[in-house]
Each structure stands twice: as C-alpha cells, then as structure tokens.
Image 1: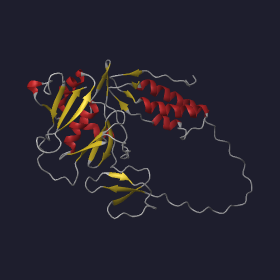
Image 2: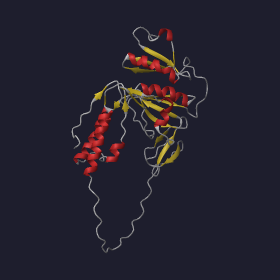
Image 3: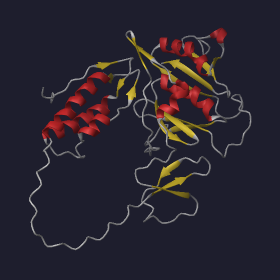
Image 4: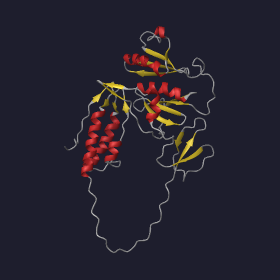
Length: 318
C-alpha cells in the first residue's frame, strides 16, 4: 500500500511521546525524498529513517510514538522500492589507462578544548589543522564524528535509576539510546542558560537527580567522564551535575552561603504526589513532612526533597 503523503499523527498529553517540532521537521525531509524534491538538507536514506531517534517528552503535547514509527517504516519501505536497481556490468572494452589521482589529504581532526576547572570538552570553532595554537587550553585531537566521551550508551548511564512505565495493561521498559557527543549550546540573548552543581559522588547524584529530571520530563542532554546534564522541555535551560577533579571536597551545607535549592515546576498537583511516593527509592527524603504539601505556605503546593549529599530540590505544582 502506498505511503500516505499527508500523514496525521495522534497527539497526547501527560503521556510519553515524540517532540512535535522534531517530528515535523524530519517528516518534511522524508516527504521531500518520497516526492523527489530537493531540500535544504540531504534526503534521508531508508536506513537513516529507520534508525532515527526522536526526543521523548512528557507532560506536554506530543505525537504518538506508534503512529510516527509506523509511518516512518512505511516511508522507508517505499523509498527502497523506488530505489534504482544496479545496472548490469558492461562488457569489457579496451581503454587507455588514466594516471592515478593524488591521494586525498587526511581529514583534519577537531580540537576539543578542556576547561581545567571542569574538564568538560567543547569543540573549537575551526579544525585544529588551521586553528592558531592557544597557550591556555589543553587540546585533545578527536577524529571527526567521534564522541568525546567513553564508549557507552545512555541506557548504561540511566541504568541505576531506570524505571518502567505502564501503558494500559502492558509494561514498557525504559528506552535505551546511543551515546552522543557533548553538544554545543547557543547562548540565549537573555535569561537563564544553565546551572552547574558540583557533587562529591557522581554515581549517587546521577541516581537521585537523574531519576527526578527524567520523571519531570527533562532529557539527558550531555554526557562526559565527570558529569551529566539534563535539559528542561522545549530546549530550555539545563542543569549540570558534575564531579570535577578540581573539586575541593568539604561537607556541603545548603544553609550556608551558596546554592540553597533548585525549584522545579510541574503542571499538576498529582505529579508532586507521585514524585513524593517514589522519591525514597532513588535516594531522596521528604523535608518538612509535618507541613507537607504546604510547607511553603498556604496555596503553595510543593514537595521539598533532600538527597544523600544534602542537596535540596523543591518540586512545585505551578
């Protein structure tokens, strides 16, 4: 059956689904390939369509994952059918040998600059082969296309706090995604860009913070040896959890000078209750239990949680 060239996907709220804008952009590229139109980006191949992974979002409008996956499978099959078959080999004929072409120069490596305070790697603006050497940053050559983090999958990173979600009467395991390079983030013209929290034990922090961010619909955003970050929905600000080698280890006191707590919003009160019900399994304890859920005052429905390192997070129903 021919693939639908005017696809319509069901939308949903308060359940997991694919990001609307990302799906729309990719579907436009697939339609260009199906219709033989030239687009601003190269047309995706059938393999690329089947392997593409969309960002999964929660707590906001999104597309049904089954609808999108089924349509992409049909589109990939249609493109394979339309692909020209290899031409038969022509009979051998006498030919004049051509001079051998000069070997192509090797592709330049990207220069990844490492901040000695955080050891977080960021790509330089130009290839190392043409960039002027800078005395301060430490340069580590990384082949083009390679990830600047140890070989691992995000499923491995998420394993300590992976959870199962229920859809109807069936149980769906938490998804596994391939590891990606640390992305470069353009700075907004104004407003909060990100918050960087240094921790003593990365594994403990990833288990508690990672579960909480994922449960609130944030996406695992960056992965490197000494840290992780999670980005808020809609490509908003992100929070870095980092165990830097430059950390001066001392007891953290949220009642001292510095960061007191992070406040994260959810749209419904029942979501606060669900976080509280699950939090103890991921290293959090409820603060001000005798006044919960109005410890912040009448009309302020929130949960105040503290993890094993003493970091406090407030989850508030906005």
